[in-house]
Image (tube, rainbow, N blue to C red; front, side, top):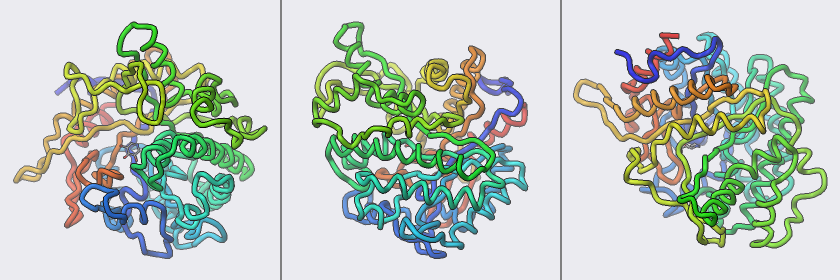
Length: 451
Ligand code: IFM
């Protein structure tokens, strides 16, 4: 069978991966000296997560990682993006490392390498040690320094075998959902806080890159950004201007300082017009955020269509609802693979000749196993093929894309959505922990095998 995506040949060495993050898949929140995180507390607060669900057990990856590595090998993955749980390594967010925490990732890294799967850890995927949350979280200027100190311990222990590192996952989402919209930990609702948090998350990235260079380890390191290709709802100049503003808010506020060492003037002016002077951005900070890194991780799910008009919090644009003329996932996100091609083709003005890795791309489809154990997730098969074809097209047009990681390896805890959103290539039956490769995992396996 040949369908869009199956017959595509990618450059030699292109990484075919899948991703997870610690709080979403590990469970085992009280084991081996792990300390509490911001998400442990948040998810246990009534009303924060759908159906009152938590990451206490979730996909049980902390215990089942050997089986999961076997499944990765069965699919033929050549890379695995996971995150290291900071509260396992430093239960209080600072001080000496907890050896049992690092031992876990040490074993995982060795098992991956034994299967020819490149380990690609993310240092921070939102599970902030609770002690640091209580000391101010990402509103505190000390948190980026703590991140660098923790990162150093990871580089020391794993840096002889890990050669691709990611610093911070999706600072826009962490800052916006955590500090402006109140949907993620710590649940605040304040635009000013969101801007300050985004600055400190970016400083954490810069500090982690500095720590990596100081470690003397060989390898590459970079940030992971959720980038939303933005288009105006009409050709009206007001909508076009609104789309430029929204692009600054979600994309350029992060790309510009990371790659050009300076926040975009237009976005800073919008923020300062709404929340006052941003004295938290001190002399030297932007240069530190721009400490040269080696790659860019891009998380892409869908586009943003923007119309002029003021949203809540006063930002001068509104996001259009999904268009009925575009296909969508089971959570209503538009399926727009052509925007991924455009996005990847347009990043060179920031990345230059540095490689781009598509670090997340995926969809919610809710298909369940039939009586024979087959999960016929046709929607995900089509989504995967279409987005791999989009990456292939971008490479053909000259974009330096070095890998693709489907989100997610496993069904998992989808933050405020709990378990009702299933993103996995692998179906997880939560009560028993049983895993089943969905049709999408088998389709991915065929694509990888055909290279
Ligand atoms: O599950 C999340 C992930 O943790 C960060 N990026 C988006 C995914 C899907 O919402």
